[in-house]
Each structure stands twice: as C-alpha cells, then as structure tokens.
Length: 274
Image 1 (cartoon, rainbow, N blue to C red):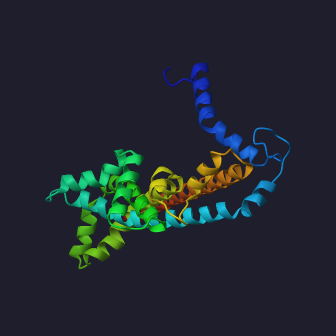
Image 2 (image 1 turned 90 degrees about the vertical axis):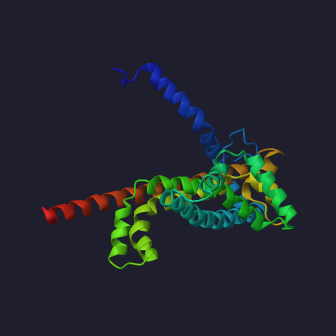
Image 3 (image 1 turned 180 degrees about the horizontal axis):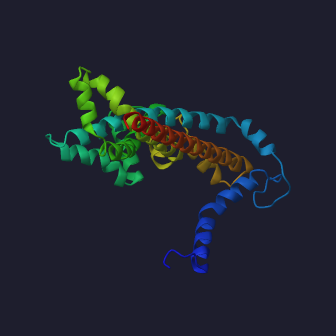
C-alpha cells in the first residue's frame, strides 16, 4: 500500500523534524544552563532570565520591536484587506494589472532590494531614519501577505448575501461591516498574525531603514551574536518562541471553537426548518 508507514518513511520524517527542530530544542535547553559557556552544560538555572531583564539594551530593543510589529501589522491588515476587496470585487478597471503587480511585488522581491529601495526613498524625501521609517518599511512588505490571505477567502464569498442586505435598505458600509466582515474575519486575523510575525522576525529591511533609537530586537541579537552567543540571547530567543507558540495555540483554539459554533448554528437552523 502506498500510504503504509515503512522504515524508510519513518526515518525520513524523524530526520526531517530533527533537522528543523533540534536546534530550537537545544537553544531552549541551554537557556537554562548555569554556565556562561553556551556549549557546556553546568546545571539547571534561571539566572540568565534574571540577567536578561536587567539588560536594558535588549529590553529597549524588544519594546521597539513590539511597537513596530503591532502598528505595522494593524495598518498592513487594513490596507491589505482593502486591496483584496478591490482585486476581488472590481475585476475590470484601468490599471488593474499594474495595481496587482504593485501589491504582490514584495512577495517575490528580495528583501535586500526592498530595504535598499525604501532607504533611497527616505533619503530622497529627507525623511530621517528611525521608528517610523522601520514601521513604514514593514507595512510595505507585509501588506501583500495580508492581501493574499484575505483574497483567498473573498474568492469563495457569496456576494449575494451583501447584495440582499443592500436591497433591504442596508448602506454599503454597514452591509460590509455586518455581513462580509464577520465571514472573512478569520482570514483578516490570520493576515494580522502573519504580518505581526514577519515584522518580529525581520532583520534585513529593518537594518536598512532603522536609525538612532530604533534598533529592533533581531538587529540587537545579530549584533551581539557576531561577538559570540551569550546565555541572554538564548533566553530572549526562548521567550520569543514561547510567545509565538502561545499565539498560534490561541488562534488554533479560537478557530476550532468558531468552527464548532458555526456547525452548531447550522444544525440548529436546519432543525428549525426541517
């Protein structure tokens, strides 16, 4: 049988997961190492987490990263959702091909090119590099990911529902807010989480567009790793892994509950009309 688990298949899966996740597991383990040498285990300790919270440079970088990620993800979600609506609802308008290419260009554009082009733009208009340049840069490259996620949901959306609401006297914006938005909300939230995660992880684009007082956490980690990995770096990376894992878990539970509630409502409606 083609779907049968063979020794080769099991070995391939184990080696694949080990290649992907064993370095992360080792990083988490050595974040609790007593020794300052990250490759020598000297006993369990949480002192490096205490040292981390006393490291003002890393704390400031983390705070900048969270502010940039939250603001850029929120704005990118709004703009990406509007772009997806335009691409799905208006299939014919002048410049649609150009608009589509501009929206999706950051998906295939190397980050070095994106970061350098934005840097040249900010220099040309005399915009001092700092917090807002990093935020604008992150909005630019994360907007397209939100548009792709939301557009994939809007393609299967039944427009007759919104048209029926408008025929009954509902204004267009109110019809979108009460009919369309609740249906596509999971996709919108998924796009926001994707944009937020991409902003947290970005190093290249932020390196080109950051300035004094706008050093993000990936930039801070990279600058310190060049001089050698310290236990504080392992600790901060472990905290980031935990935050992302908790966020993914919460999203999965919320989507599952929403799906169960939708099936229950559908079953109730079916029973009432049966």
